[in-house]
Length: 119
Image (cartoon, rainbow, N blue to C red; front, side):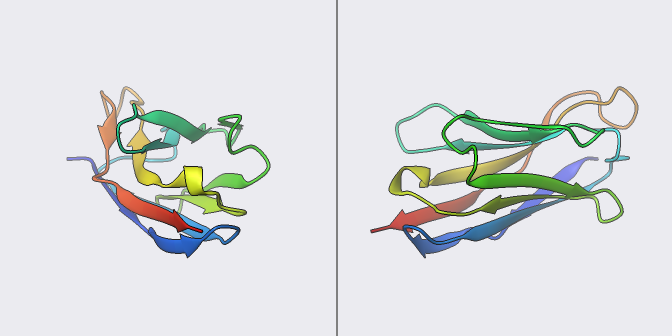
């Protein structure tokens, strides 16, 4: 059974930083593309950043240059370093694991961690 557990959310002032972590279990992990998504109140869930098994990355335009996604396969953990946070970054952030066809045959989601950016 694949499980994803996020941590690291909280309240931060605009311009500050936070690092989110997502620990996976029940999967090989190194073969899985991983992503961070977010959902603000009244809005649809959107992709924030994604990292492939080969460590290539892509980002939403709104976070380029401010957020960095990384992974540690030995720890089965994906991170999202968020710098220069803005009010509009306030959202629940979800970790996503994409299927690898071996240990995970569908997408899996964590329960989310709340990030609140204040002025």
